[in-house]
Image (tube, rainbow, N blue to C red; front, side):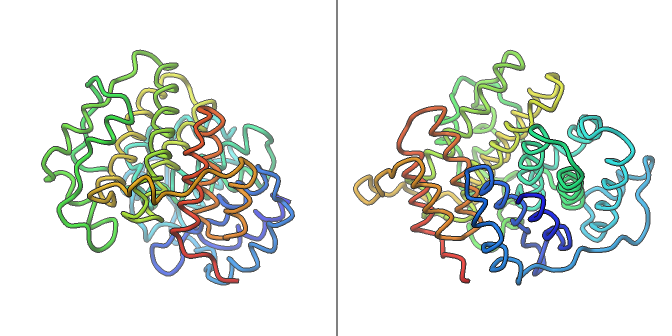
Length: 342
């Protein structure tokens, strides 16, 4: 079923209506992963009407000229062609090992959707390698490269706070209006921003970096429950971005795990700075936790792609922590995000 879904989706581009990200590959991978393959084609029938054709390339990106094309959205078709060729030329793990450290500083690409789509693709390839899964990785990496965008004013973690405490200390950008680019552009001049990034306790080694990444995904997911009203769609990515990085670690050399933690932390904190509300919602206004299976079923019935992706992450968090607030956070997303119209 996933191969059929990928075949349909790979005729479309990574974006539509300007900068909006094509969530189809991420959502269907989540649905199949959680036993809802029977719903995939019905969901795609409703979702794909909004998508646009796969962009074509104009001129070739070369090994010596890739830096000039990095972050150039006009070269999206060129980047898709480049990674299609690279993944036919050498093993996918070798391509990922080369390009992960090049792309990682631009983790804000496409409102973090470049790295999120990559994480979903890598999770599948770690389970099974085939032509469609390789093509999905190529489209994910190409999208990330074309929309490559840094998080301004970043500082390496050097403090003593755990992820939950560090997220609580992230300041809000002064002007929470307009789109994400306007908000992220304010970070470098936002009082307390660099200090809040430095507040996170650093990892002593690769394994600790992996553990800290899991803690970050846990903290961002649980935080969503009381803070989703800041922006229920965009705040999803404070949890799904570090989850995507965490899922990619098994395919990477351990030497890249530490830098991956730092980049994921900056991305998660940036989303919270850009969209976090001034105050959390009162506990009595928050939904109760459903059963584990019901949480994902509710997201699929709701239909919105962000709710489905967030439910996928929240189930990981619940399985790691046993905290029912992770499941309640899914219901908060379903209640707060407009459902997909069929």
